[in-house]
Image 1 (cartoon, rainbow, N blue to C red):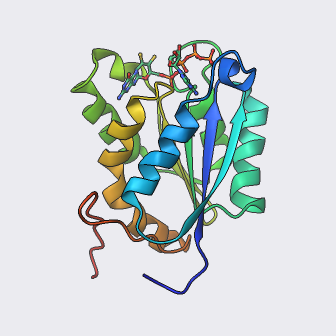
Image 2: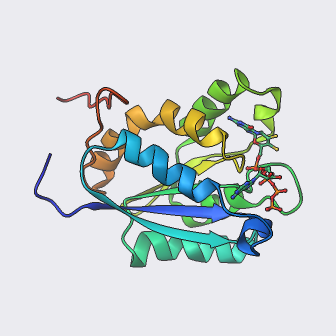
Length: 179
Ligand SMILES: Nc1ncnc2c1ncn2[C@@H]1O[C@H](COP(=O)(O)OP(=O)(O)OP(=O)(O)O)[C@@H](O)[C@H]1O
Ligand SMILES: Nc1nc2c(c(=O)[nH]1)N[C@H]1C(S)=C(S)[C@@H](COP(=O)(O)O)O[C@H]1N2
């Protein structure tokens, strides 16, 4: 635990229908619930729900990273092959550095659950002092994917100066090579 201010975490739902209110957004609340289970140190959420529009996704990612000051941004939706699925393109547009291992691990874990896991182009990347991680739109994918990659996230945030996150070791053992 630290006396540092709580880390801000962006929770970005990218869904045409959830953003129009055609169905209730279940992805954003599922991410919030999963993060609350994993993270033991103070954090605050910045949640947004937007349609699958490339420019808007990119602008919202920039706003969450640069203006809201989120050290971590987790997106859900828009990672597939359909014409309107453009979340990975928006992520690549705003990041200086891509972190392909996140997508590789999440797809590999998801393949144990569903054969269509290979249809997700989910990725991750660094923008300044923020880590952006894409999750698929299916709310059930959130638990599988976040649990798989979260052990490496606190150290990644340390390395980019994004603020410190401590996990509940009973739920997720964060790995910091130097401690
Ligand atoms: N934010 C969400 N809340 C609840 N269910 C969702 C959400 N996003 C996706 N889903 C569900 O998962 C399915 C697959 O997600 P996917 O993002 O591929 O859908 P989509 O057809 O592109 O959604 P949309 O039209 O809303 O952009 C959807 O058909 C929907 O049933
Ligand atoms: N863990 C997990 N991963 C998953 C899925 C899922 O249900 N669970 N759905 C797959 C499917 S069917 C698609 S089309 C892609 C892309 O989904 P998205 O466009 O909603 O991001 O994610 C894949 N990855």
